[in-house]
Amino acid sequence: MKKLLVVGSNGFAGSYLKKELLDHGYEVYGVDLKSTDSNTFAADMLVPENMNRIMEEVQPDGIFNLSGFASPHLSWEHVLKAIHLNVDVSVNLALAMKSFCPKARFIVIGSANQYDFPACHNQPISELSPCKSDDPYSVSKQAQESLLQLLAKRYELDIMMTRSFNHIGPRQQRGFVVSDFASGIVDVERGLTDELRVGNLDAWRDFSDVRDTVRAYRLLYEKGHSGEIYNVGSGKVYHIRWILETLLSYSTASPRIAYRQMNNEMPAFTKVLCDPTKLYEHTGYCPQCDMEATLRDVLLYYRNLPSPT
Image: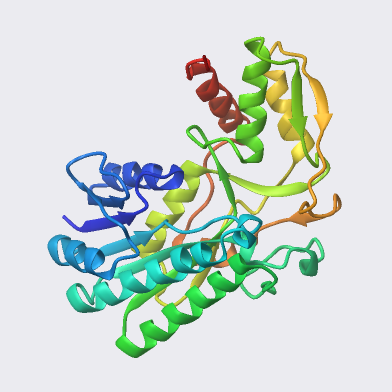
């Protein structure tokens, strides 16, 4: 039985990836700041000695790094944190892999936020589309990719990277468009407010169910090509207004819609559409989850949470 190590295993996508891998017969270990079970290591991943110890003990056949700093906007407030979490952790893992399991496959999960969306002119975004370097987050991700490619070449390591587009599902915390809509609707249902605050409803974004996304990660481990960068997305755009209307159709709530202005929002005309052709061709991946069912699942998740006191 092959052993796989999920770094950032307690997070939204990490917890789903652990289940996906276990369901397909792998022996799965996790690493995060807190341990949740006997197969999860509690460790500060910025400390190289911690990664060396874990890698030596587990001797994994595959490693997934889902940890990191994920917000371009907040990276201006936490410049060094963004650099350290996105560069240092992945380099620590790669060097520990070189020392203790040099034949393992290392998959580093990145973000579509690396792309320069306006420069893509509403066209499908491929791995060759322009990336941006206008915030500390994007600079850190470019440095991460460049360093890992350098280490892979120097030490003959099997490393691949993703640029993952939006993925949603139950257990996603507030602070993202779908979870904010769903939790806000539940707040109205519970009588906590009569208002639902929203941003730009006229944008179009590529969304996947997180369960599809982690299936793509598993397939990359099994079938992906070493050294490649892969877009992970659905290849389909959804109108943000349609998402809100669909969630409201599952509810008896009639909230008052309040629009908020965010300085960092992209123009309303911008469409962000993933071109996942390389992923499809190399792995046979194809999305399976129905978006309307996913939206219903997210709403039910927030309904089942206890009401705040």
